[in-house]
Length: 173
Image 1 (cartoon, rainbow, N blue to C red):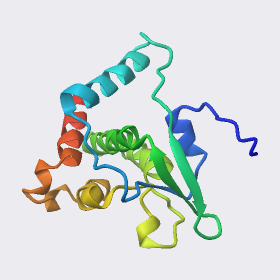
Image 2 (image 1 turned 45 degrees about the horizontal axis):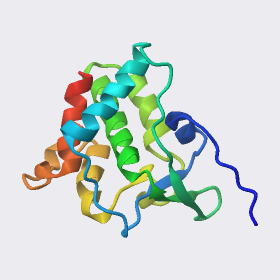
Image 3 (image 1 turned 30 degrees about the horizontal axis):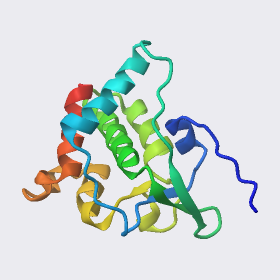
């Protein structure tokens, strides 16, 4: 019997301690479906309470994953539970980076990108992004992640990934 113990970490600390790791949403997971009014708004309000000092901490839930070594110094975390929260967190980080770029805060944008959003030492192009979402959301998310918003099609703009990204960005602004 394994003696594996759960570990409590805040999400950003979890990201920081996993350099050269890609979070992969397996094909058997459901699509990204978080609703703006029901889920995303509450998620952002909880973070706002923490940042404003109203709440000292917020339990974001449990993240379950299977770690797979994919070569020397690179691993993949196949997400078993926590996909919706994880994707929403990455959309929030991308929105923060984009706002920093828009306001000329290049240092903050670079820090967010290099610490949380990319694997800067990845040798394969498909390993560069820290998050590889479900196939159905991959193209839209990749365009957001690589600052190619102008390439997002009319159809992709209807996706939950894009709609939530825009909502999150406007909420933060």
